[in-house]
Amino acid sequence: MAQKFNYPKIGIRPIIDGRYGGVRESLEDITMNMARSVADLYAAELKYPDGTPVQCVIADTCIGGVKEAADCAEKFANNNVGVSLSVTPCWCYGTETMDMNPHLPKAIWGFNGTERPGAVYLAATLAGHNQKGLPCFGIYGRDVQDMGDTTIPSDVKDKLLAFAKAGMAVSIMKGKSYLSVGFVSMGIAGSAVDPDFFQDYLGMRNEYVDSTELLRRIDLEIYDRDEYNKALAWVKENCKEGEDLNTKKKSREELDKDWEFVIKMTLIIRDLMVGNPQLDKIGWCEEARGHNALVSGFQGQRQWTDYKPNGDFAEAILNSSFDWNGIRAPFMVATENDSLNGVSMLFNYLLTNTAQIFADVRTYWSPDAVARVSGWMPEGRAQQGFIHLINSGAATLDGSGQQSKDGKPVMKPFWEIAEEEAKACLDATTWYPANTGYFRGGGFSSKFLTKGEMPVTMCRLNLTKGLGPVMQIAEGYTIDLPGNVNEVLDRRTDYSWPTTWFVPNLTGEGAFKDVYSVMANWGANHGAISYGHIGADLITLCAMLRIPVCMHNVAAEKLFRPASWASFGMDAEGSDYRACSNYGPLYK
Ligand SMILES: C[C@H](O)[C@@H](O)[C@@H](O)C(=O)CO
Ligand SMILES: [Mn+2]
Image (cartoon, rainbow, N blue to C red; front, side, top):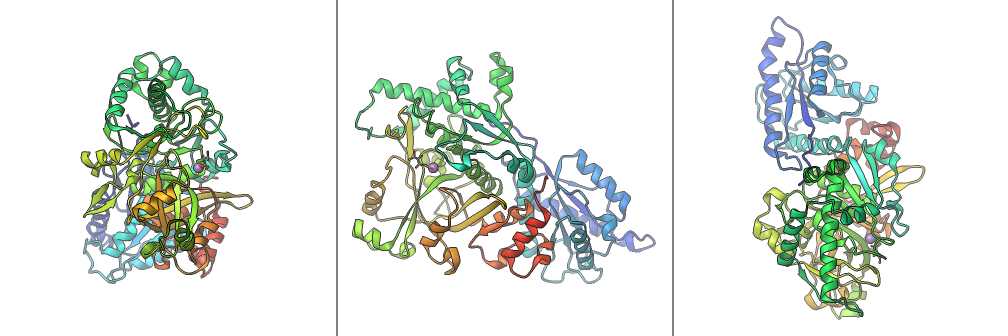
């Protein structure tokens, strides 16, 4: 039922020396072929969140002067272009041909060939971008290529892809909504949604729906009843129920009513996000349109959950890559309406097209503490301690690590997931009746244990008054604990919630001096955890959005930011802050 968004395209601008009488004529095909080779690369390597190949728009002609640049800008504007890449094998006239659109993420690939000075155009035009306050990424291959060689060297390919992935994320977010269902949850500052952040930094809108809308739609049956019945049957078949760990147990009838209720919540939260044409057919045309939301947050705690079944089932299933309709794109739904962790999930998702784990950064376990309570002294990846990531609700079931690639646990884009892998994720999950100490209204919570040895990246976007948004990033691995140790540690806390044991990669310095320091420096109670080491892509994305990165463990040589960042000093992190401050929010 995922809404079909009209995804933005990548615009490619072949730049040429405009001098006729021999020079331009000799370069027309070579230049246009560069553009075509990049378009082929993007179509082959990059996909939209719905699994379709990323589309490119190439200028109708090579751009040798301002008129052709203007024609190209018009074509881009008419074709929903959200990212701009200029390519050139030769010299040309920077300020006459450069892309001047202040909102389009932009880059220039200057061909490293010495017959014509592609690199000189790159440098000259980047200087122009820097002088005009239009940050632009520079791409230049390490090794000289022969003129007319249309192969793309691996170092150039890496940067072309890194730029495009981040640029697509920026452009897909623009104009979409963050939907709050309910408002501030338990005093969590991230759930006091800041519309100025969304508007100025992400170009997004904020939509707000009171939780009573769920009750209205349940009571008036404003949902697809056929789908509801299909979902109910699927849940009975695929969602195994755990023991009721509450002192006061619910009856079978009460539990069944809770299942019916939380399934309806799931349909309704999804419909609120992306709409549902089925609602039109039963006379609810306004509800059928939804709120154009790319990401949402459900307050849940406490008023709703003090009264009604919790949102854990809805959050977990919507964040997963499958449901009763089969394998499908995940939604981004933040529990506790933590909008900043929701945005962190969205950044991860748009860079990877994979489902996301939402977790509390709950407990740092030192080796000594583990030995004291379990008798086991951590070893291997766990030998310096580890962090317990756990939150009821919005952890994707993909996070169980039951999907695999080359025999290793992974989390895949939905179009790569096999039926049996989706089933394995469901089989690895137990749905416990909700802890009525926390969730007086009942409901269910998903419980799984994330498989170890997955490379993962945890991030969290924080707001600092007077500074604005900052991003924290920790690449690392999930780990397995010996069975009995996992039980001992897990049963000390909320056993009916999903658990991920996480070890960040340490650098020995600063916040990454040791595992304890990572937790001590983490800026909020939550983190968004993605499969893969995607820290460098997150850093590129944040630079495009002018969001400084205050903590990361990504190797310096992997940093890829706009060329003008180098103007702000030789220390990468300080320069990031100065550049972001200088340029300010992308849409302000
Ligand atoms: C115990 C609270 O009810 C939980 O919601 C808490 O663990 C949190 O997730 C707070 O972020
Ligand atoms: Mn939480």
